[in-house]
Length: 469
Image 1 (cartoon, helix red, strand yellow):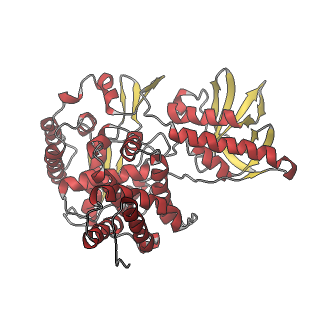
Image 2: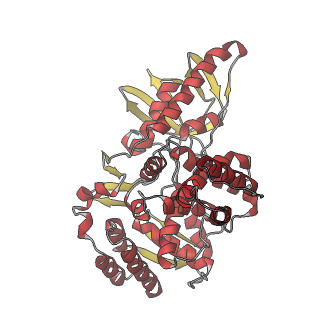
Image 3: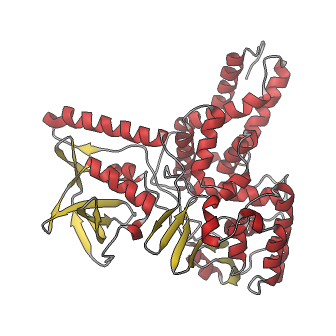
């Protein structure tokens, strides 16, 4: 028996349901008929997960009573069979519904790529057929993902890209300039002078790199942004982390910095501070005209935390120092940087202006494949594998991700007319960029990276005579 918190009852397609959530923020639903609870079928579960994912709970919940607890054995009807499901099954279904703590930029996603069901042997074939259909459904969801449009409900507006800001802010992208940003910084009494200098430097650097970037969210946030230096314990409570030295809380539009943190270029503290100072360029949670406004810039596929944090590090750090290699989310940032550098249809400006589904779409477009959701999922899964002691995945599972990134890099840097020495130089530069300062615990297989290099060279007719590893 699993203990769930009852979020409340809601109506969906004229049917009453009850939404519940466990301690790991995984959803479960019951059907309510004549005040009696019933288990739902798999089609209802998929539909409800998608409704919660796209429209947010406030649009659905009628009775928000979070004090009630309920113990039940989660079951779903699959192929006419009432199947007892494990939490791993619930987790795979929830992969279509992001569980990010929206108020803190330190919380991880938790997705998985497997599930287990318990059925009687004589029902196995019928259940397996239903589960095969479920796999096909999930695969189709990943293939047909799209950029959502603005969702508007009772006192809530969710936006998915900056084009949808026109009506909310009653202005246009071109109306806000970098001069406005610098004026916002200078005129804000809640930003200490030493941080004003850093922010102005960031604005001037980004003016050179991204002169047409949409600055409206940054402009809006800077007018009320607070930067507070607080005792370490208070900061860590705000960050829900025992190791962070700074955090941006979008719900408070405040950057908290632990006392004693060094504001000195070249230090890790400095990188963390500038990383957090980058979040207000893109994150928004506010109230305008009695409506809650929320930017939902992660991916509709359920990914976003690690990719978003990596891109945020890259756009801020590269604006300060193009040659600095040490960076937050090091391995993931290495991978994202290689991908973005090789793409000709996406820049970090797009990261500021769109949700991460747009990045996945541009990856698919650039590579002429439909693998982007899977690759980003592997990238975030590897981060989870490294940081969670209760999660273990064989390193070979990530070789497909390495090959995907290598293919993007080699396509632009290798050609059949190269000499062996020239090709080896390209290979070594790629491996250095990919694995720079990556902790040993990731166990990245250099041997596999070398083998894929050979495979790629053969595929384009590049001869590697006398080549040895």
